[in-house]
Image 1 (cartoon, rainbow, N blue to C red):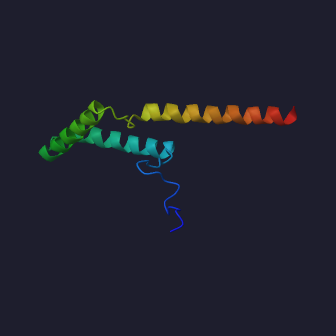
Image 2 (cartoon, one colour; image 1 turned 45 degrees about the vertical axis):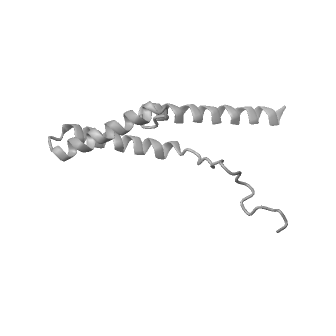
Image 3 (cartoon, rainbow, N blue to C red; image 1 turned 90 degrees about the horizontal axis):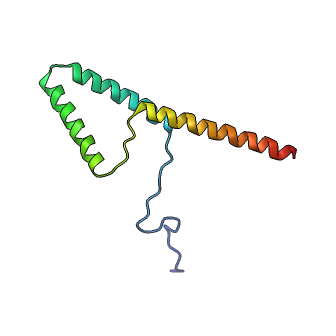
Length: 99
């Protein structure tokens, strides 16, 4: 009982954020988009109910103000932006070392 908490790095009420793997998110978003297209084309009642459920859950999460991370085009833009940022940083490092 030295007063040191075993869970010291984590403060109560704080959650650790996982890093976003944008390439993984892009693949998942593309797969989800394909699934939704096949569900829309299907005339099966079960598929219609699944599509309706997914649509409602997305609408409710948007209403709660949660960020939507299911648009492949936007995720691809984010990947490109991140890559350009890295490239710019590497250039800056190269210039700094020679100066």
